[in-house]
Image 1 (tube, rainbow, N blue to C red):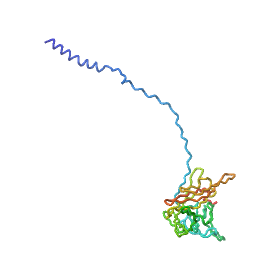
Image 2: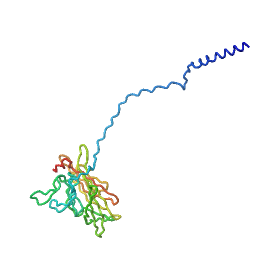
Image 3: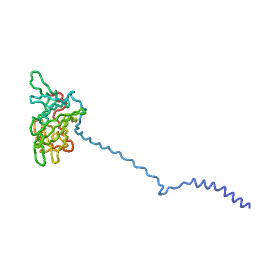
Image 4: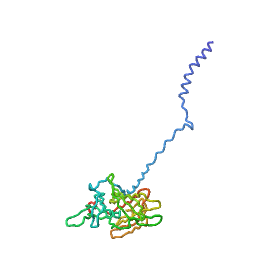
Length: 281
């Protein structure tokens, strides 16, 4: 009996010692417990410098500020009869030939002036459009047959400080096609190309199916071939380049085909810049 008690006592004393010994043993790392390798330091690579592309010319419509309160009015010009004058900006004035529903003249400068001892009122400033009245500026193609309609000016309307001119193209059979034109001043901004321009929006009304309406367009003395462009289509487009000692200029002629279902834009950028235009020289 004494021997059994001694054996039990010895067993109880040895348990804590054995547990402490097992917890202090260090486990050797196996294959799965290998320390993770430290990432290699990346070599300093020189950053690539991106070359900045030169800015493209931007054509913007500035905040509309007309040069006078009554900026659409009728006036005699240069002794050639009465015209509708549209003063879009102090650097862009237009004279519309209402008999032919077309631009007769465009200029930059003082506007319309009648000086003492002068018989006629005239456009005072730097000329940028000079298109004498012609009979066949509007053309209509019906099922492949070309004709030249009579033109009637039906007045103008102003909304939100924008003007819209209303035309009627009268066919030989008496049928009519309506056209609405809205001109606006634009400015091309670029470091080395800062010039004024004109944007014209055309909308065709009540054109029969199979009918195409076209407008003869002339652009003179433009710096670049891309100074006249449209989201419509030119028919019989001709560009002529004239060379000078100091550079070259482009002349343009073409028939602008209008769209019967949506407006068509025509943009023209002129040689003159705003600073020269403001001087009117």
